[in-house]
Amino acid sequence: MKKLYILLLLPVLTLMAYGEVKFKDVPANHWAAKSVYNLVKLGITQGYPDGTFRGTKNITRYETAIFLSKLADKLGAGEVGSIQSDLKAIKTEIASLKKGAVGAPISGSFELRNAVSNLIANAGTAGRGPIVNYRLKTALNKEISENASLKVELDTMDAGFYGATRDLAREMLAVSGNLKLNPADMGVVGDLLNAPVEIDLSSGPRFVQHTDATGLIPSENGLVYLRPDTGFNVGTKLWGADVSGGYIVGGYDSAISGKVETDILTAKLGYTLSVPMLKALRVEGGVDLYTKNPGSSGSKDTRGTLNFSSEIAPGVSASAQWGLRTRETKGWMVGARLDLADVWKTGVNLTLRGSKVGSEFINPNLAVEELIVSGQDFFMRPLENATVNVGGEMSQSVFDKVTLQGKADIRLSPDFGYGKDKPKSRLTGQVGLSYGVAADTSIDAFYRVEQNPALSETTDLTALGFIYKF
Image (cartoon, rainbow, N blue to C red):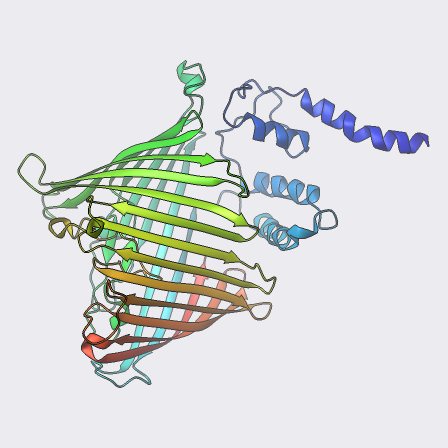
């Protein structure tokens, strides 16, 4: 009986002991105080001997492994059966972290793909034949201090094949830095601003669009490589809301002078609301101001966006977007997305997405600068004015190391029409398999077919790829 009494009393005493912990740098009114002290009560973290938590300090991979290990122990599979798959993923990540080198500064991937165009299709194609291409992505990460970091990225994109050439400094390289400022360290005290102020600075091409010079793969013509912007952004929390604003260079007049041709000013506000029957509702609004040829009578454009997102059930999340450039509906863009993460417990993950873009949502005088404002389809091709877009993407775990993957997109006219008399209509579908040779190496194979009714053209692509991540 005495032993049973001690066992019942021990958790209470433990919580009381942890509840007495008060960090010098985490006051009760700090925006993250509740989460920090909840972790302390669970015994997952204890802070530092000098009585500080150091919330802005970067942690090593070993420290991350210890944190995840403690968390996994607290959420043992025998206690919480609903998180079995999550625990398995956590344990796998812990194992990989323990095997990895401490603070490895360089990461990236290398992809080599061998393909044959129009192996089966024979309607209106430019020809058929083999294609070999590659893509190298690397990132050098440098932690300058607890509150400052630097990242240098290299991405070859379509350089070296497809007949494309890219400027190393302007297009393939990108540099970004992050600086965190603690209001308390600057003498700012109060409820208005008690969260870190983050300043992001970057220099990059913003995006690079591919042109299929071979004529053999029209399904990849126009795809966009998303890259870091050139500009800066400042963000923090005010009264529980995420606020940020920044400046982006929209374009240059030439690769030699480097003179800025287009200014883009951005402002965003986000807040998470408590809504009945939902875990939370995330609401984000933004305004972008474009000015071409600043200081002259160049084109100007203003657009706003409103986004809603929420997890509506375990494994089920949904989001909706509304963008407007003019008061009239032809200057609007509306879209919705649904994500299903293994809701049937069969290893199937599914994403469905649809959108309608008005005929004047993208300003024709700023077509290059606003190329990606409507988003991209599942093949990373930008959505266009006067189109309806519907698509989906799925993955299915077939065996332990084999995954079935598929995706499809259909582009329709504003009246939901599809056919030869609808110049923007297009249908693209792809199915393939991925085999994990090792934790960081996989072999992918896929077959893709595309139909373009306006050109009376049907093309396909059969590919085998090797992907190595480091």
